[in-house]
Length: 94
Image (cartoon, rainbow, N blue to C red):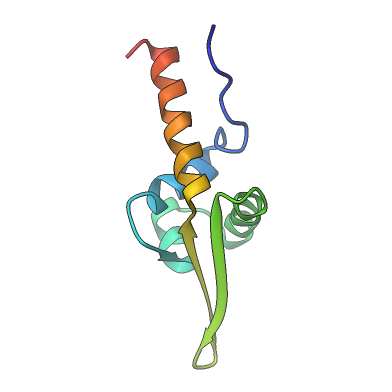
């Protein structure tokens, strides 16, 4: 019997964001947007979803007069990501 895949992470863009964040201390919104090719609006919605379940932390501040949004993965997010990868391996029989 397979473990169900986490529906939060089973979204292409949310999985891409988590994949980026798992390898860095933090990343700003512009970097994530450029790396994923997402629109600002869609990325903002997906970041809010990841934040609302505790998978990432979001810090909003100003650098000079420009807004700056920084994201970092939480321990809960790392665990969820690792579990998701393990579940995929089970499905793929790796």
